[in-house]
Image 1: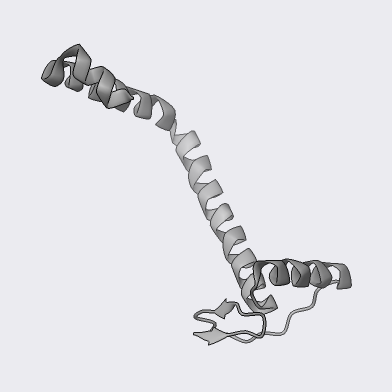
Image 2: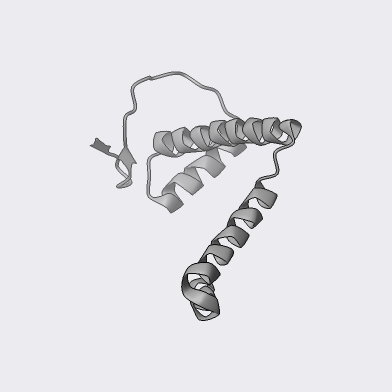
Length: 100
């Protein structure tokens, strides 16, 4: 790990590339990097990584929707099953305590 001049950590940086940005974009990125206490490289690396993960999770969510799987209904069914099990095992008093 290398500490930058702003005190941020540059972790696992292995590729050095030349990129071009508009003056406004680089000025804003520098401000955000300084605000976050990391180097410009570390901030851009994190921003690019977050964008890639959003794309990946978005594609996954789209695939789940196309498949017709309803996570909310499944979660609700799980909660109802847990409450029913609690009532059977602990009676009404135990079920209320498990929820609160």
